Image (cartoon, rainbow, N blue to C red; front, side, top):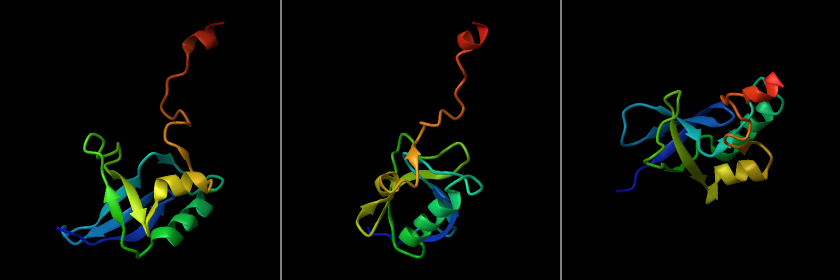
Length: 116
């Protein structure tokens, strides 16, 4: 069964709001495998505009890993394909994001370094 899925809005440089014809509500999705700058960070607005040009009001395909479906803020995590392009790969290629986890967010620093 084919479903129509549309990107309705961009609310972060790595997130979009999606409408699917098999749901009666819109839901947020985070693009998998990337970290994009926040809107108030350097490059954030540029990254958001890049994403808007790629997907806003276009039909998209979403591929979700069943072992990693929802992120810590309740957003669906998935690969977004639009016009035959994987947006995770395109974002990395075009310098709009970095690989997920490479900013070490949430990591506990090595305490031994501080004790020396």
